[in-house]
Image 1 (cartoon, rainbow, N blue to C red):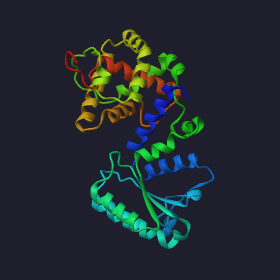
Image 2 (image 1 turned 120 degrees about the vertical axis):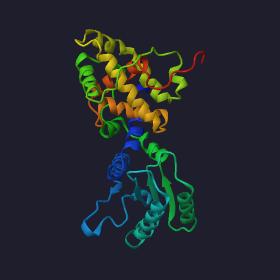
Image 3 (image 1 turned 30 degrees about the horizontal axis):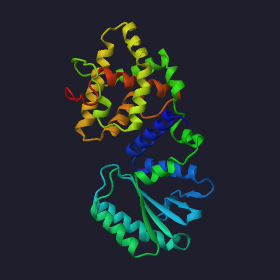
Image 4 (image 1 turned 90 degrees about the vertical axis):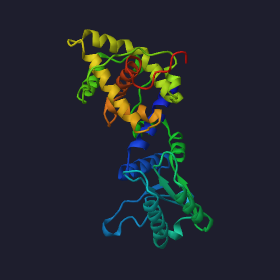
Length: 301
């Protein structure tokens, strides 16, 4: 796997971790664990009134039971504490003889708040069973151990450097048509990208690599707009990106999270073929240069 493909999968995981909630996040967790531990990890399916007996997944070789919590909105301490207590105590009557470690798995990218952490530490100190917690770092640690074929099953076939060089007219047209269907803001000036913009915006090395490789074929996007029958098409789409960027920035999202949201904005929530994803990255790189998505560094920076 080359560095570009690796960066693509890193961002794909981050995007799914941030966007998936509830059952979708639980399915993501189980899919990762099934690929990482085939014939070892057991997914528990809720069964009518019986439910899942407070077991979302079980890793047999390590006698570990997982409970997943990924609320649709920001995690609230009161609700989370209630659920942790119910799930922890509720798992014992049915599963106690089978597990030594209970793991609270969550989707809070920036960690848990003090009351939740305090409860988990109290439960851990009162063992058995032992108690652990998994968030972004722990789940990423499992993902980066996956084989290339498993990553493709999880996130789709990734574009590579060769795919990026082969981005064609039809690939670009399809993605640009999707962008054009978004709400259009009024036109404004499109300013050239200044030097140092990637570094100034504190984008991770993975995102910088994706944009830098995408820029290698940005000339194809420029040619597409110059040959298109409507000479204002490119400027209209640039303004669409600008508006979406400002909406995301107003939410206080970190730079990499904004990038993954713009990736979904351009290509759709469901990933396409490697060629489609290559076109998305090429177009993102083009608009990164041509319009005001992400911040322009001050003069002299």
